[in-house]
Amino acid sequence: MTKPDEERFPDHFGRSVRAMSDYIGIGLQIAVSFAFFVLAGYWADGKFGTSPLLLLAGVVLGMFGMALVLMKVVRQANKKN
Image (tube, rainbow, N blue to C red; front, top):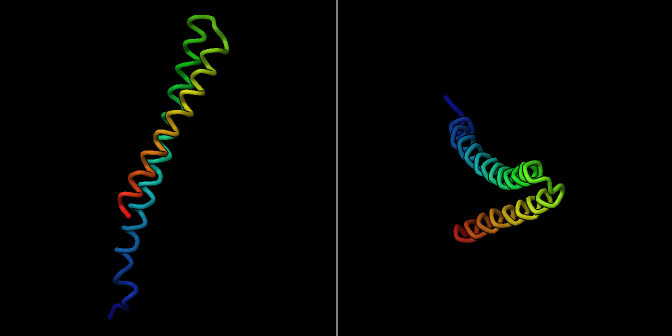
């Protein structure tokens, strides 16, 4: 005979994996949005010889992109509640 706790284990495990995947996705979106603009600024500095101006512009744009992703996530979380 199985215990009630053992029967619910797959349900708890599935919910925690789904929640963890949501957080990993958010972290990945934030990292990619920041890294894209920073790397684009670094590449443009090398191409045009404007070091470090475009790199700094990329950092600022990357931070703006991170803020947009976070605002989107917060808005979605508020809709769920």
